[in-house]
Image 1 (cartoon, rainbow, N blue to C red):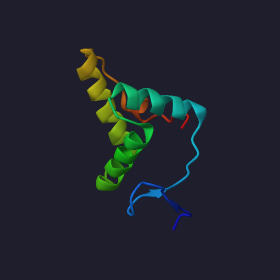
Image 2: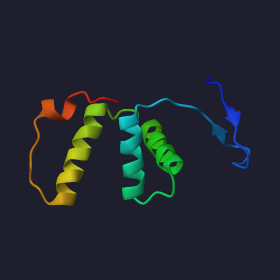
Image 3: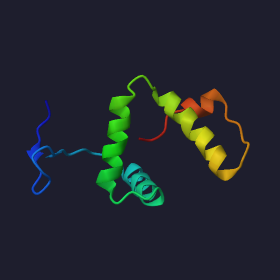
Image 4: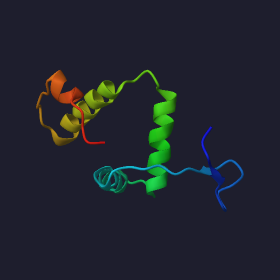
Length: 92
């Protein structure tokens, strides 16, 4: 179990945790939560964690494929990606 502290004012069922991420990842997180209309970084991260827990069968590759399709849908680009491009490691 992780070392956690109960959040002040967060209610009895909320706990603070500490994580370390790269500066690049933090910049991406901040850009994403703001662009997607979340109220805060914490709200965005909680939802991402809920998705990971609710859908543990989705692999990193699956999420990349979903993201590529969503990007193409939003931008109207019919760009295709190879499986290797979708599954390539990033710097996170």
